[in-house]
Image (tube, rainbow over all chains, first blue to last red; front, side, top):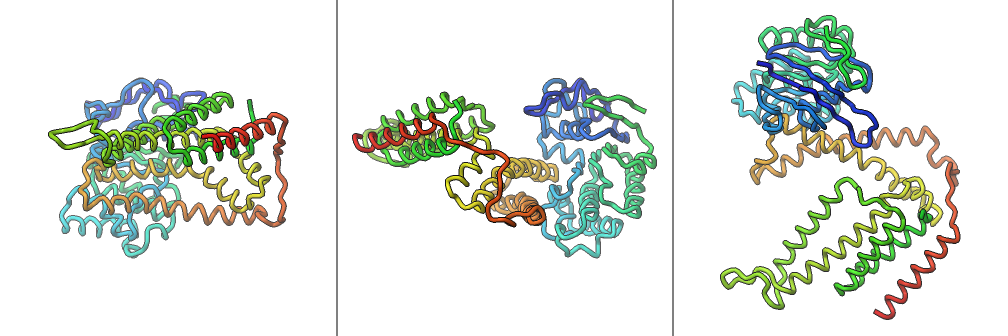
Length: 220
Length: 237
């Protein structure tokens, strides 16, 4: 069964002349890795918003794990899919790096021991442990991105959707990130990545979808 | 009809003042009708995002407030308990009409060109710093609303179900939501300040403007009419 199914979806932003996405149909199996690329304004982020239920399609339907996405609450979607937005500042709610990392883990009622273990692992992995008492708004944009990604990874969702995850990240940490993605993908977690980063695209082995002007132009 | 922004400001002020001044329901209703008519004459669109929600919300507030005002004859009585009285109803209707008068007046400005509004205020000798602040607020309000929406989505995706928060958690949830927004505001403020300085903000006392606004005969006529009608209303009613 397909995990995510987008079927003949159209969406137009308010006051826009043309559709942001036109007749998009994508099926994504559980555990699949998808890379979505395309120029600016091609509809990649709109696609993400449709899966996130942030916007409703003008026509067409989105299914998640066999059910219409409208039957899920946003919290339920978040439990199944870990989303990482393009701008990490929208996803930081706490005043220390450590509190920010454990925020989601507390919501899903992980034990203190589990939380500490995950925090040790991920914060060290992404070189954030030394910053654990810092205000996350005072670290670099790349470090914020790593913090947000690690905190979403730690929640161990069924699927990960990331919008430009390597923005502002140096080559060393990018390498760590790519290895992490490959590792979790091999463990069965599905991933959808929206990116312009050629290094990321070349080093991840998945289906590539190229979008232009709201439509899927090529799949390979 | 496209009157000058200064004419519109006077009309908005007149309606707002009269709406607050008068207590009589019939006069408030007449003022609301007159305000709506003015909006139609100016070609003002009532298709503003969120207007329906605001109207509904105001109506609900009116209803709730009415329940707390006692006096007059009971309208809704449940097991001897006076839930809603005529005094409460009258009070609620006055609040409603007054709010709608202010709302429809605000529509006149919302549908105006923001640059013209800034220019109009400057020509009315409002200090430019205050006008600039107002312009920035209008410019960034839609951004602020969008960021608020994104943040609310993000926090729900991280596991907080906003429909099921315990009372003791409400304050902490609000802090979580407003933390990234406040940071964003401070960040934007810093960058805006630097950008404005780089682009010569207040380098010269009297800056020039790309556009210009001019009062026409129709504007003076409208202003005269508004002043006369306001005075007549205040004198005779």
